[in-house]
Length: 120
Image: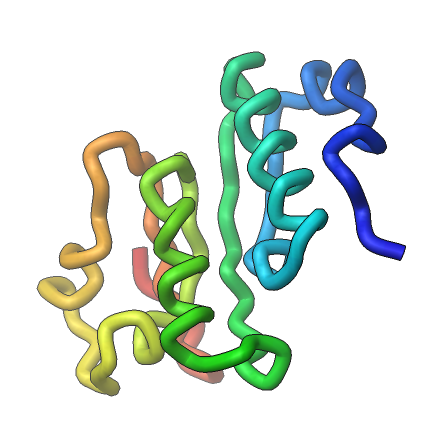
């Protein structure tokens, strides 16, 4: 059974200070609509939006669809934790490549580096 927008506990979402989410629920409807509604309710209630795309490529129809959906909500997040290689199409991770994904409302971008930890 997939979560539907009408099943969200909006009052509980409004009480939260941080709303943390991933990208898996963007794969299919009605989860995608529920996800987007929950994000909007949380943001309207002044919650910090924390996004970890947590790519699971085999679940998506295609890499292009995954990238498109992941990026479709990118500019809504206040904090993002991400492995950049897939999104930028290169294994050369440096400050310039990380900053290419920065957006004006972002407060913190954490770039994971596997065994090497992360950069911010």
